[in-house]
Amino acid sequence: MITILDGGMGEELIRRSGAEGTDLWSARALIDAPDDVIDTHRDYIRAGAHIITTNSYSSVPSYLAKQALEHRYIELTTLAGQLARSAADGVDKAVRVAGGLPPLDESYRADLVPSDEEAQPIYRAMARALEPNVDLFLCETMSCLRESRNAASAAKEAAEARSLPVYVSWTLNDEAGTGLRSGESVETAFAGLRDLEVDGFLFNCAHSDAIERGVEILAGLTDKPIGGYPNRFVVPEGWSLDNEVPVEPRMDFGTELFVESAKRCVARGATLLGGCCGIGPRDIAALAEEMA
Image (cartoon, rainbow, N blue to C red; front, side):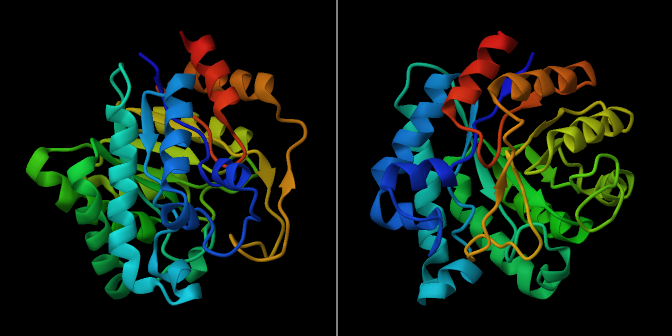
């Protein structure tokens, strides 16, 4: 059975608000437009998503600190879980909520991953805040083994009482077969989490070619659920979530090619499929229709 994930939240929320993709990024919607968050979740559910991920990607202290709001990160992470739960419970189909645990600094930047001593208490607090409203945890856009260990160990701790699954999703170099953004191989990252007994493995926010190759590698390493959710842009050097360096959209990666890439992932063993930045409800609807 193929499980359909949702697509990107940030760009959808920005589009609905008419605001620029700066400031507190998707956390701004939690503060100013919580109804938009629910509506976006429900659009993905209507499109065919079986799992939606909480809008907690930027409810981390490093981003909230840009407006002196870092003290609200637990409150806003809790709210992200509540809004996703409300969206999932308000429909007449079974939908699971994934509690998203993101990078604590910049995406893709393994060199900026906080120390274990700094990261672990933040991840534990976020996981505890999400736990009452989620059905699984998704540690996503992990750029290196150490980052994924910190997030996954906190998720495992919070998940223990209800035996919730914990998935880890790494982000890959866009050149297929060259490993994680840190330069570590998929094999190294996978082996480094073996003792945590992670329940599923994915790749996200990377070029579709890289994800297809990553899924192929994972299929030879595990019989647990695997999959991926690519983005639709190329990241220029020096980019960050809220700076003025624009990303370059992949004009060659329309809905049809997105679906074809997903089919190739299935052929390689994937059972978890969705989209990341730039992939919207229409894309997920096409994917869900094809997989059905």
